[in-house]
Image 1 (spheres, rainbow, N blue to C red):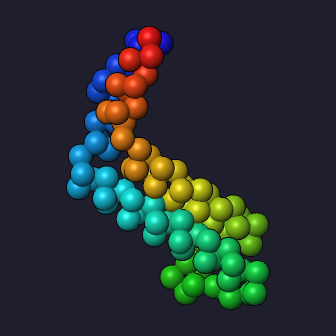
Image 2 (cartoon, helix red, strand yellow):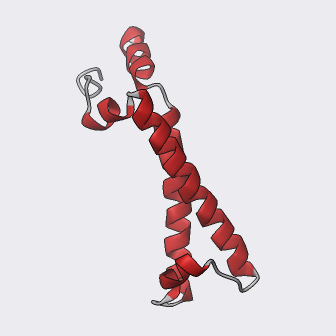
Length: 95
C-alpha cells in the first residue's frame, strides 16, 4: 500500500503550504455558501443576479450546476483542511 501513497503527490504537495490551504478553504466556503444559498433561493423563485447565467440552459441544468458547485466547495474545504503529511505518516506507521 505504501507505494501508492508515496510523497509528494502534486495535489498533496500543493495543499500542504499554509497560504494555499487558507486560499482553498476560502474558495471552498464561497462555493459551498453560494451554492447552498442559490439552491435555497431557487425554492422561492429568486436568483442571485450574478448567477443568472447558470439558468440559460434550463432550470434543470442550472440546478445540477449549483449542486455541483456546492459539492465542489465541500470537497475543497475537506481537502484543504486535512493534514496530508500527518495522514501519510500515519499510514506508513501502520505497516
